[in-house]
Image (tube, rainbow, N blue to C red; front, side):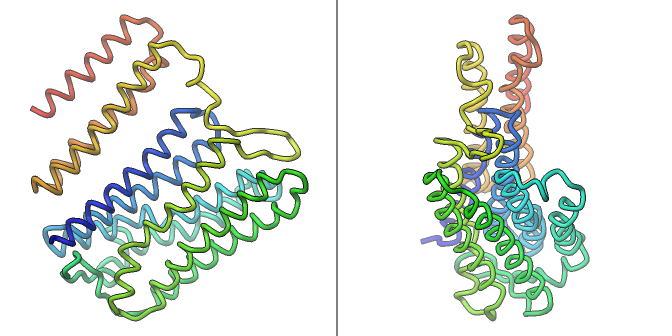
Length: 332
């Protein structure tokens, strides 16, 4: 049994899982800041999982090392966006929309990118890939980098928990929000603990197992948060503002809007399935599959908003035809 392939495909499907949640949010109401922040959050998780799947199934140590470094655009900024997202949800007047707050939130993420991204200062030192039965693993020796990562996971997690607990204490009557805040708090603790443990432990098999499955643990807070936002919304107690994914442009639109939305979703599925089959099972060149799938993915996103870019049906039909023709031409 090819355990490396099974794990790589599972990681890739996990990335698709995150992206579909985020895309659903912006499709429902792209004007909502909560929806956009949720999309950014799931996009970083999708990048993280996608890169991990390529890291695990790469054809060489060099390719694996490059994509492990590229994954910093996922895990390296995820917790910063999560903290920002929590501040937006609770509508904390002391922090929201202040440049100093944004600097404090995103400065560590920027440092992560500078240190660990491809061609970053610590790229060659930190990524020393070795082949195993379950795919490529990073056999870099322990060092100060792990201390930085432990602090990164711990400080962001504690900050998020503190903000949520502070809001929980202010909510007195709404039992639904208080209950789901507890669920969300508990769901954050698990992946944060895994992240800290994976950087404290020495290079033993259990540590490599945690590193490879880390991204799966973030499904729990994602599902918890998505469920709460989709079904009931998050209420700002003072302004009585409700953020619900079903508000916005989707409900009550004509069948023509639904046609473009359905077309977009079909192309999204096509882009994900194309890479899944082409890269993991048919073993086609990685670069070609990435370009093909990314092109279809972009076309899918653009398709959703064709009715908003052009009001005349004839122009909309022409744009859709050009998009469809261009995709077939590219594939051929």
